[in-house]
Image (cartoon, rainbow, N blue to C red; front, side):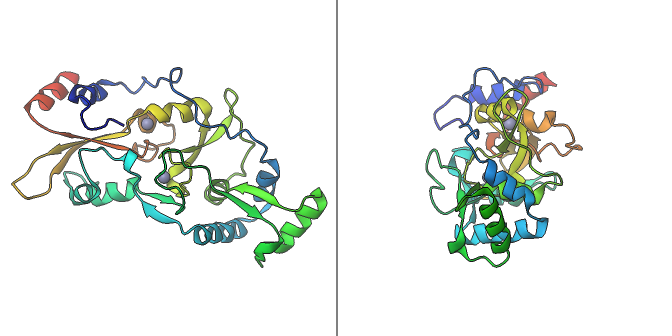
Length: 267
Ligand SMILES: [Zn+2]
Ligand SMILES: [Zn+2]
């Protein structure tokens, strides 16, 4: 994200980027998910959708999850209240984008720079009626006393039609990807499966750009244009909903004579 004081030219340059310009070679990789989680994945895959959903609800409650906009994902040139009040030329107004941007995060470390993934330990102490019989059988047959699962894997199990495949950071392999770059976010809409190159390239992506126009004094600004990020535009199966897979970060630009002129040249 561009912080206050960084040049306006950088934002203008963002508008120039073409959909094909996703650079994957020069961005840092997200932390590996390659560590051994195979028991966890196997156990999650063996759960029915309804049991997985009960487990998801348990995790949300246990972690005091709540909707929250993580400050790094919103341009410093606008605050959350201003964002929510934006009016729009389309149905995607400020309230829409406030919800679109909000993560569903565990209460711990939501604002740390590098929050850890949220893990859930499943063992006898939990005494979860809906889970205990399956847990006992699984632990006994594998000679283990507990299972450590990545909480967001459970969310994905509930969300996706297919069972989860083994995740790998190797070329072409699948990883779990947070559209918001917030590791402890457990919001289903912010979680997808994609390959490592795409996942890594999201780190450097500025996200969606909103072109705003000043209105009368003391009235909210108006969203005149919405520029989804390249990930959202390039994603197959987006069915024209380019915001669905766009990185959940927002940059804003105030439409003035310079910006209008610049955009005209791009078209
Ligand atoms: Zn999120
Ligand atoms: Zn992106």
